[in-house]
Length: 557
Image 1 (cartoon, rainbow, N blue to C red):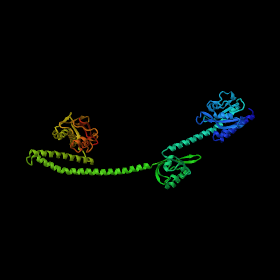
Image 2: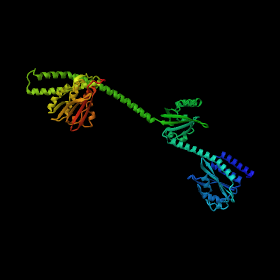
Image 3: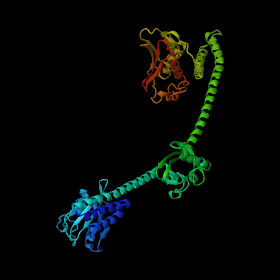
Image 4: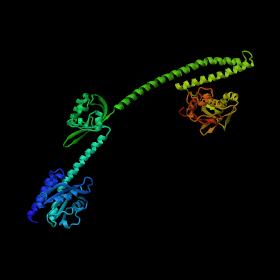
């Protein structure tokens, strides 16, 4: 290559480098480079092709042309405007596909020509501009006469393409940055929390859609305003300025990187509670930016206040109920004691009458005294139940455990209930398997518990039915069952059986005697022995209560 020619091409590369350094995008660099190449090579026309925005795998013509003689290549320009260059199609498509410069010595002889029927064109040269491995543009040039490929020129054109690739790289980086900014803006606008940012001078630089709703200011109104005067309540503004200044001078992060609760200022001139999270980011050029997510917690505070008031009200109600419960227990205990004294006198005189010590009785008198006696016993049992419940509620219901012959307790319970069973024509059966021996128990209270279960069976078994009391050894425990073939218990009511004062539907409907305390007391007695009680019942077939108590006194009793 002649030295003058070499110097021209070097100058071309230098000019292309200068243009690439100054240009912001390929469109701005295209025309100066086309002109520089045409001037250096003597080619009369140059043209810029760019990827189609709808399909970047296809290149299309642009209006960036350089012609030495205006209008000389009008036919070529028209054909180019109508042409599309998929990868591999025509000289433009081949340069884009291969990523290397292409040279067609004689366009008229080339079978891959896309723009056919164009006169006055000899040779065609095209070189790609790539950015990050992707073709960003193709520059093509044409001569009037056919021309053989020039390897040195192709090499220089490849270098020119590389320099223009730097422009494309900057474009791609700028586009990525803009896309990232738009994407971040869309993300922030979709947030349910308000996002606000300010620069180190205190001016608002970012304001999302949620912030518009929270503070009542549009984005256009907020951007550029002083943040302190816009959303900080008046009493906090001085502290805000001091805090920002302290951070910028000393780096102290008193409230940064923490989530705090504070009040904010609405454009309508009132404060409202918010949850605030602030962090700072430093840019080498722009300086510090303070970013914040602000969550309006007005509704939450109202809910918390409502819950707090409800809790206080509930606590007061519970306290009052406890007072009433204590008063009720005291009243029950007092009334029960007051009833017990005169009732004891009544029963004592009744025994004198029934024994004949006060004189002989007629059959009618004997019958009436029997009725009085049974009702007196019933009333006495009710008073004892109420006193027991009072002691349980007061925490003074204590069992006196000692070694006890269990068979004697079983027999005593049956004996206590047998008169009632006979009046109903019921069979009351006691069955003991093996030698039960003795257990640690309070004999009086255990008898009471078993009597309650037997009375329950008698009350809910039709005339002529069967009530059984059985007992047997069960390892380290004794298993006692009270079984009847009576009405049974509704499954929905069984979980409430041992609740104080509970009376089932059948008991209410059939007016069965009782206050609903017997089973509750029985459960308390059984558990006081370290045992458990369970019920198994089928409506219409009968009920079985099962008690398991340990033979030896539990260590915690």
